[in-house]
Length: 119
Image (tube, rainbow, N blue to C red; front, side):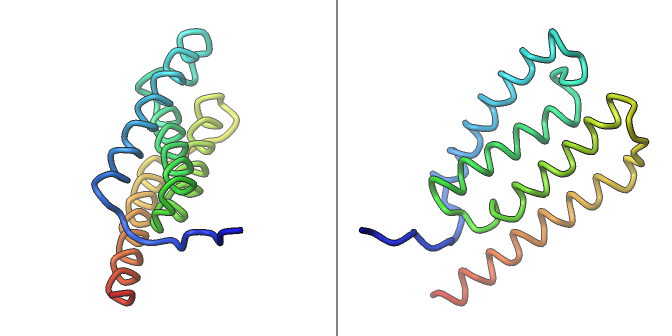
């Protein structure tokens, strides 16, 4: 029995894999958005759900460290935006997007520190 591959760093192949999975997911969700308007192609919820699913796929395939942080962050932000689209919550966009960007930057910084520690 083999052990789990440890989480590590981004590579060009991992980035392309994330991009491909996110793009495919965005296409599927955009198609759903034709019939259910809260997930229209340009909604923040659709884009963030696609990015989150790309991160989850990348985590399971490549164990990219930052995806272990950004995946849940994107899911949470997408869910908040979806609640806003459905009129179930009021979202201050000026607060959510900066938190997402800070979370992504922090995840990449932690990954970069992890890479330097391993080398």
